[in-house]
Length: 191
Image 1 (cartoon, rainbow, N blue to C red):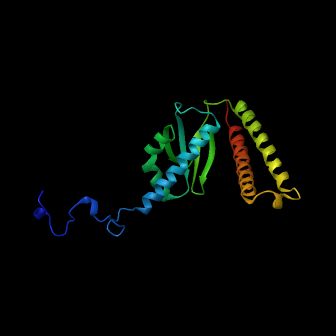
Image 2 (image 1 turned 180 degrees about the vertical axis):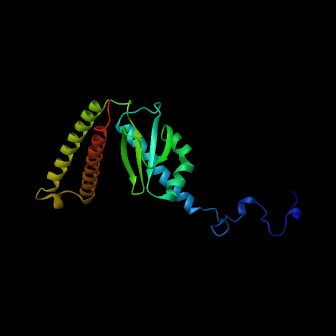
Image 3 (image 1 turned 90 degrees about the vertical axis):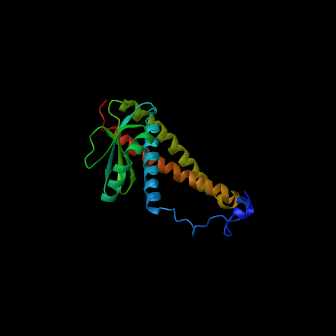
């Protein structure tokens, strides 16, 4: 192509073309980003719960979403096929009254997930497994707590190690609470 064919406004090569700026392009949709973030959090919660109960990905489960916000209900209904695919679910239903036999997990103050477990697991065995895991976590928490209470802990232990220990203890405490909730949910499920 001859240089005479180029318009006066176009640069002679892509190598010297100015990159677009955010002013040039208004493609950001903050509402859509927030909706997708909610769906991602919900799917991560479901996958984590499935892992807690050792449910393989090939086993499709029914998923009931109890929503306390009308705008979010609309969003969840719109994204339900995506949620079903990503959460390995046979069916996703947004409902005000989920059936019995579900593990109940809170995603946020606006939505809770009810994962149907009846017929998929032996509740007694799962409670035993979760109880062992909870006991092991409580031992770790106690060790970290005792270490933090040592006389020279602040002066002898580097700050980054103290911070890591605190984060680990808080994470373990949160996991113990989650396990207690899971065991409570299992107690309502018939084998």
